[in-house]
Length: 346
Ligand SMILES: Cc1cc2ncn([C@H]3O[C@H](COP(=O)(O)O)[C@@H](O)[C@H]3O)c2cc1C
Ligand SMILES: O=C(O)c1cccnc1
Picture 1 (cartoon, helix red, strand yellow):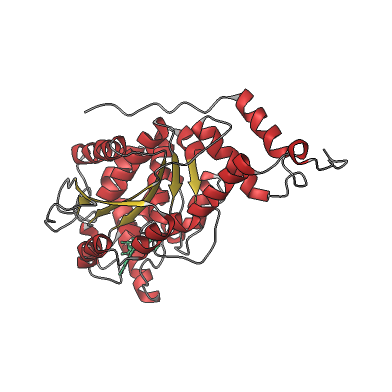
Picture 2 (tube, protein in one colour; picture 1 turned 135 degrees about the vertical axis):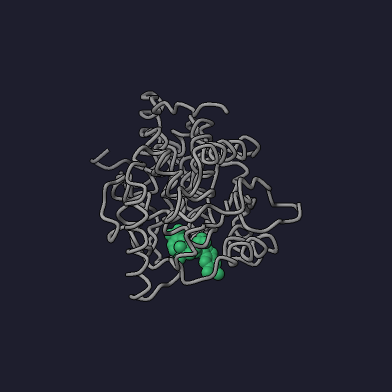
């Protein structure tokens, strides 16, 4: 098993200064393109060029089942996980539609779904086990399984073309894992981290909080990021941790979807803080803990559309903003080239 990569902070002051000059020289009042300007600069910094071009964007949806669903933490049955994998592959899910619209190549990864899928185009079979153990009874994954999943996530990214990775997930019960990871790694009370997921009512939410509190107590000693990841689980989350680390090492732009993908970034960030510079946060999900998680990381997402779906849907919706940001930097005229007079502020 190879060790985890070390992600060095991006340190390229000359490029940063050149980019700022280029952006400020465009035919607009200073700063008038708001956060699109920061987005353009971030993409250029990740790709290490004044002329960033996003190439062959890859949407990768990691899917896994959760043993904790036996405790009634989701409003939907666990079978929905494999059924939705089929739906992704058939092109009928929200992320399938949005990926098609935006020209994103879509790959689904079986990280640990309770179903033996036939090999087919668009599906990577990387199952570690048919779902995690019930985390209320045992660690969701053994340390070995967890390390294998992280490595498999790295390997998935190694095999992808392009310079942009959009992450999505599918796994009934995985808002529970995300809430548990947030509570443990950010030190926040589980009540504040827990949301309704697929749509629990008040009684269902109260039950979920009770189950998750007990899980945290059972795994009180799992405080290190990888220990917490193994105990609290999600094969799809563990693979996304590996995917984030690998994409960061390769200097791909990483587009982060909602609460669950963000929980993988939380773990990757705890291991290698500089991954954050490579991450674009697509949207603020309606799911209970997501605003807290974004706040913990100190990041501001691009969109706030009241989504609570996952799959990578928010990442796909944010994608055209990244494309626009690059076009602004590459195609917009400067005051000099267009013969437009500068104002006093410049
Ligand atoms: C039909 C359907 C499609 C979905 N697509 C994503 N999710 C989302 O819901 C799940 C998490 O919520 P919880 O923790 O409450 O189970 C994940 O699979 C997530 O991607 C879906 C859920 C359903 C029901
Ligand atoms: O924000 C998410 O990723 C999310 C929210 C609810 C359900 N599934 C996913």
